[in-house]
Image (cartoon, rainbow, N blue to C red; front, top):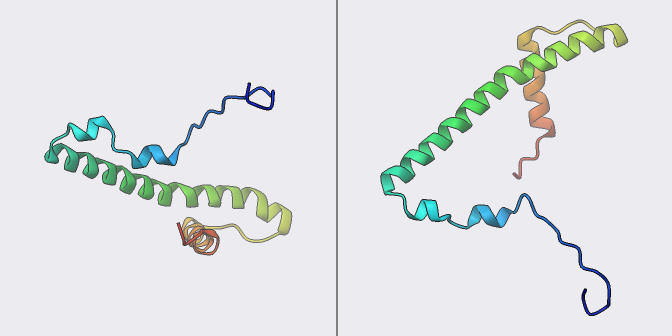
Length: 99
């Protein structure tokens, strides 16, 4: 209880941005070669994720478009390359460039 007589509730923070900023003990014990290897692995994962996102997301756009839009609006179906173009256009228009 606090000074007002009300019970305090515990709050759990699952995604604390301060935790990322704090160096972990594991990094402090690593050699410069190990740190460089870890950075390279992280960068490689980001590249693979970006490539997978660029390949799979337009495929999802194409499948959903071809499933819904022609029946509802009578508009033509999309090819994969058209879906890639639509996906890129939506990323440009609807993604916050400040992040």
